[in-house]
Image (cartoon, rainbow, N blue to C red; front, top):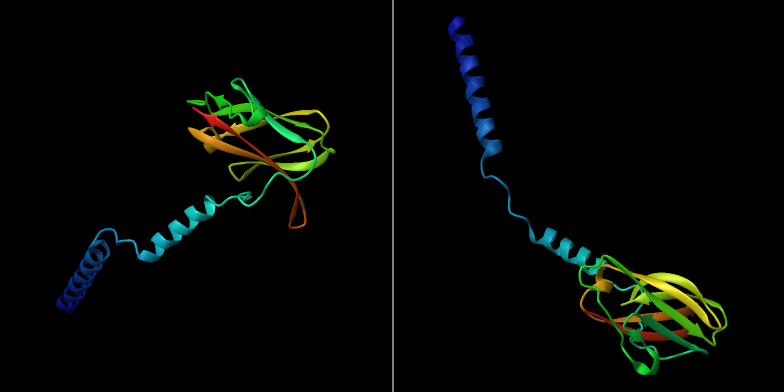
Length: 160
């Protein structure tokens, strides 16, 4: 009887040893193509624009002007901002000759803020993240009526 118990104990120990080796063998499993595709889809979704004004032209009464320490966008100018190392910066967004409509401001297609665009209105917008990266950036002032753009103004600034 003692021999039978020893054999059972030895069998259990052997089975436990095999189970432990089976669990640890092989390390990390390689990631499948499906997880790579999911990551690419998430990255594409994160970089999608809130508004694409590429097909829009100046619409609605009045004007919009950006103002920075480097100048304004009057006359088609593209003022520069010294954004290197900044985590946040504000620039002016002035409207003139508009009716006070509530408009959405987009920077490089990403929603930034909403404001009332009126007759001689002075506002400011905060720039953070990608809006401060080196290069030329587009600011768009938009009012929608359903799917139709009824006010569209755009101007650019350059971050250096």
